[in-house]
Length: 113
Length: 115
Image 1 (cartoon, one colour):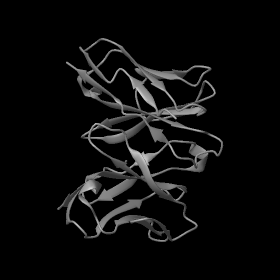
Image 2: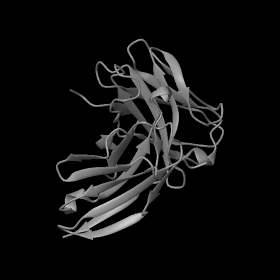
Image 3: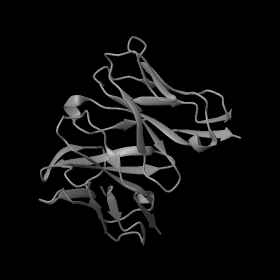
Image 4: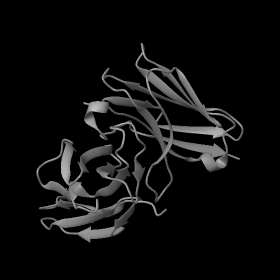
């Protein structure tokens, strides 16, 4: 059973535009929600993470919005750049499950110059 | 500081064989997790080790096993390989000072092809 649903599967954005990726989860016990960025041939790298006690977290051009009641969270990439072209994964975990991350299916982002 | 290293980077095996993959975590990191990444199933958690003990296990058959050594280095083993085991196997390490809330740093992975 997929516990974290991610959309869209792929996304094409013009340089300077806003990229938006959405995730929804089912397990209300999840309490840590990271986003990972993966380039071809590399392992995933943490981009930004949020806990359910805040509704928004911003780091540079990257913002996570979190809606606890709807069990949804999203990643916004402002002023998207060609260098942002990568695959993005949302994930979730429970504190009592240690470091077991449940990943979404991934979104392949292409930023056109 | 060196990142997570995984060896070998690429591996070709045939069905029925077994394979051992190695992971060296970032210096000082005590938790090591393993994930399988495939185009069809995405990133799936295999298991996590801390202080040489398996703390968590994903939904994989018993052919998948692992261990952690006293220096935190970890190995995973897959026995009786099947075609469906072809995947990128990723190792991630964490400091493990704050349970479940710390960044996991991923290695580049070992790409396994089963023929």
